[in-house]
Image (cartoon, rainbow, N blue to C red):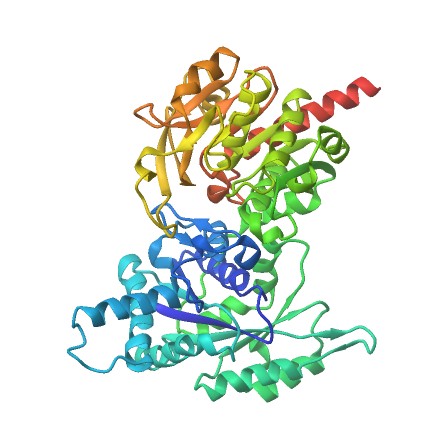
Length: 542
């Protein structure tokens, strides 16, 4: 019988509920249990696909084409499972389905209400995932903060679900903030007490409280939280700021969190195998050498906008024993080549990630040009491939004014165009080329070598535009190699510039499939090339 673990958050948002849930999932998987994870988001958007990254952070894309919350990336990376459409639900798509059901007479003319109709639909989403995956444990994270109006139907739904599941089949974990006042040197427990009080007023008594802190949790604070939140002292778990998020599972394990959860749910506490995880985390933490990687985008002031790219770089760096020092380049500030030259000083590699819209595009083109002309290892992702093609068309092929129709519909050389199947599509939500598609790798290319000479690979996509096939002959005549295509050869999936050590771009998002214990080959190739160049430079300086 599946056991359910519900995770709520209090005091402030962005506490790291997803990391706590993913870490617990990792610890259960390490014990041989099967785990499925579900993120319930209270916002009214049907999905985050149309949301500005400054509002929501990265949109994580699954194999089956769902545009989801970035926490699903953490779920996949920690538990080494594949998420899908059933692993994320929003208030928007919950209400959307209930309204659709009402329109076709499903409720037989009855009044449609939050209780029972909305709460029943939320419970149905929890059950759907259980039926589809049949896990030993289903971990359900409720987004937002307890006390928010929009999260009330979700809180009520899990209150009902816990009762229906029965004792010893479902527990609640509340993640809360303990603010630290440096002037008095105190950790304050009162906000957490109020948060749990609010949760209890909705009918949910958490079995465990996880305390996010800057400093270690003292015995007095632990006693106070246990007393006023009505949980045993051993169920007050410290979750202190760590060097890396990948340390969190071990920190929770040391406090016996998994054993307590298993005891509460009457499940066997098997011996966990965390050896490969610990080994990789130690590589990332203890690396003595350092590489500086520039990430050139327009959302660089919010690291969460590129969280999977950032983590993929760390995975690859750790594999080679290098720490990754990120240099975030705001491409709106890369106006001229002189600006770029100044900002790229000391940079060992460049990544241009995905995105939409014309803002910052010229800066992206300038950074790619600088990398190409100075043989700086470069990896372009999705829009990064389109920018690499535009830059090459302009500065190598001599097609002045070459552009994408997304940015300039009147460009004389539309080297990037709207995909044929996108021409008649109206609206933006969920209408792109989304999810996992096959890519055929061309013999004799660096791309095929990087992928261990596999002929076909599968990667996740999220785009509307593609390289215009009318210009492929011009591009290849001037030295650009098309190294990956769709199986029918109609879509360009990968390009490379063989004159450089590593100048590769892909139309897909490899960052979504990188894992701490299995870094993605394209990021490994980038870091390997950067290390090689750095070593050569050191030799020349001797």
